Image 1 (cartoon, rainbow, N blue to C red):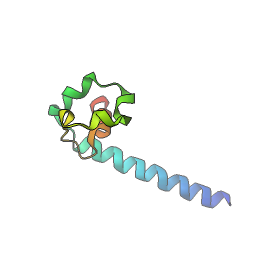
Image 2: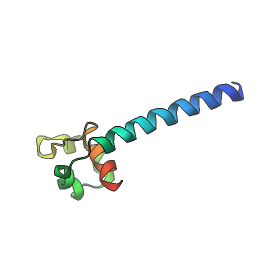
Image 3: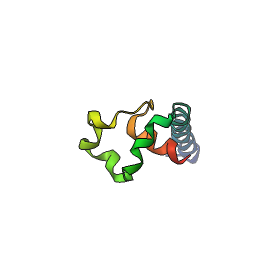
Image 4: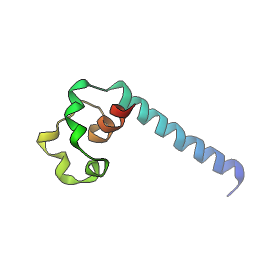
Length: 70
């Protein structure tokens, strides 16, 4: 794999990450503040995605968690 291809792949991944981060921040809502009691590891547990944790963030619980810190 050439160095140029690695740079392009890395640039693409950073671009996708930046777009997802921007979407999380744009769709931030104060109503997602109820998720403050969740720990970071909880966003990966299936139980966290119950109806009790309804978010308005376009990226769900993960987006609400990330945008709350930004």
